[in-house]
Image 1 (cartoon, helix red, strand yellow):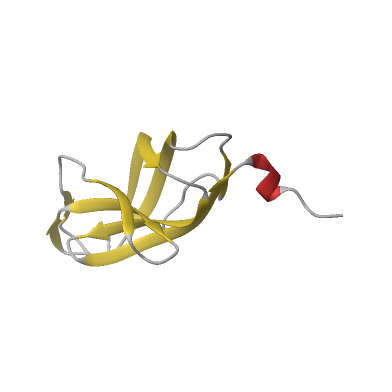
Image 2: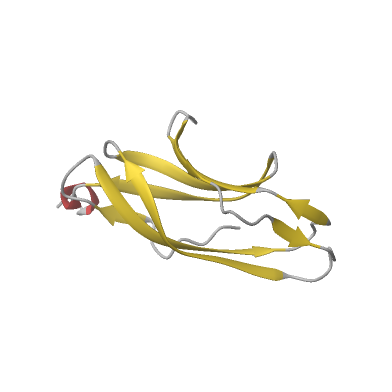
Length: 110
């Protein structure tokens, strides 16, 4: 599971750099894994990615860890539906959908 504090990001103008904090509870791993965050467009293509300098070291698969990354700067070229994805090595270990666009996109129609 990946936890981004919001799922709708009203952005007035594109392209945009968006600052996000991301948390992810991790269990079940055993070893050291390079981490990668990706923002994927609706078609599945990665449109942004970032790799923390330090890998995830998870020596005990039964012990939970809470990962937290503050103030990631995510570059977004255009409005749309995206998925924020966390990879440990080649394995996807969490994702969360994000709607990014002008505030009007999120208003309920009468």
